[in-house]
Image (cartoon, rainbow, N blue to C red; front, side, top):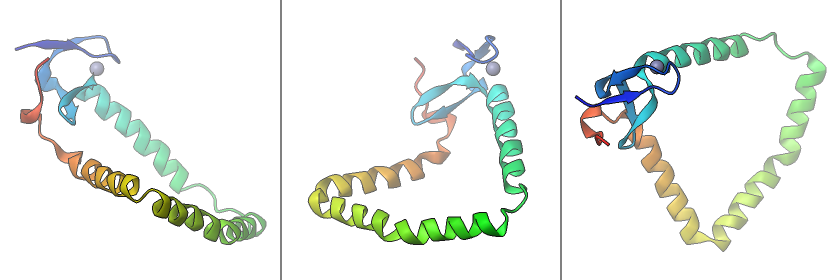
Length: 111
Ligand SMILES: [Zn+2]
């Protein structure tokens, strides 16, 4: 079996030690990916458990959002009207990307 060097731990490992995204192997081995994900989950957990913002900050955030909500939506609608084909393509790509999350390693190219 072919081997590939992990860019994180610099070890040569068999290709089945790598996850793949789309039809390419990742540059980090499974071990490093798992470690990386664990670190990310830890950071995320910390962020989710952060102390709640005080009333002043919350009021500001609410105010900012409600003042800009229509603006952001307006941009999107305008863009959609001006570039309908581009928007369609973007939407299609986005759906494809979301559907491509669970690719098994059998579909990976060996290169
Ligand atoms: Zn590694």
